[in-house]
Image (cartoon, rainbow, N blue to C red; front, side):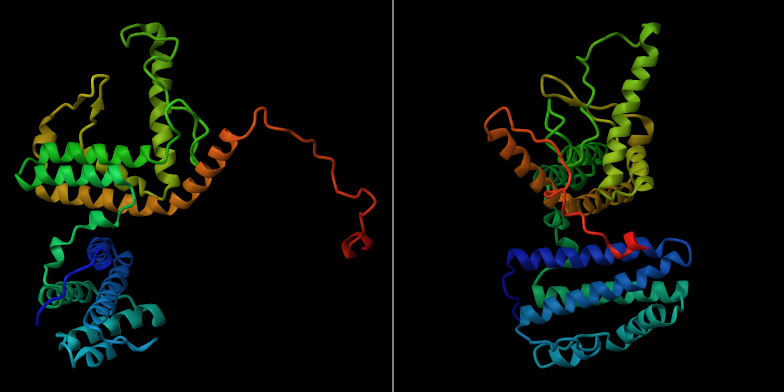
Length: 335
């Protein structure tokens, strides 16, 4: 069958399917019973995929249709494989959701193999591409983060994982910066944990000066705490963030535009698996943070309205109820 050209929304939805599948893979590696959540993620990935496939093929699916009925509905256009295998996945999901029966490690691994085989077989035939080639970066809303991730991937593609990890470090920094107050202002952000410390703040001194050791420690603690509070507030998983910082270098920006980092022995030994995990961590963090975009837009609108208003802004006193005599008693006052 001839695959139709893909529009941007279809590509984005395929990226979401890939994200759900990968989320299931990560969940499957957790200890029992936490790994059971992988069954739901695998099922969600397949269900989203089939819904998109039906739409792409011009097939109308009935609302609230049973999961396994999708195979019959799409059959006149394309015969989906692995219906029996998917029945086992659906049975495991129903048992978990409705009966509280945890799937075994074997069931979870069997489900993962079924889903990946299904996507590998079906995606090229319906959409004309491999699911693994779908760029999950398209799911992100933070433009600078997206560009840095793509830049990092160019280094990973040629096997330079040290430089690729530096790119991921910058991407995560850009993600946090996207939700921090503007430079020199503590007002323009819905997530305000105080103005960031600057090397030019007074008093200034060198690390070798023992009189400022305590001040420098407080300065470092403040910067780390601000980033940590912001990340946790945005819903980013802290243990995963700690692992990310262990794997990636601390890239420092300089006044002349240079960005430099130290290449230690551990960084030289990072693998493609390390990079793959860190890359997906930035993606997941960006998706979690995106729920704050509306809040940021609301704060920006408020800030700009006040900035453009006539100064000084008027002030008022709180005086209690509009009509002091209108203090009718409630049933609780009577009691």
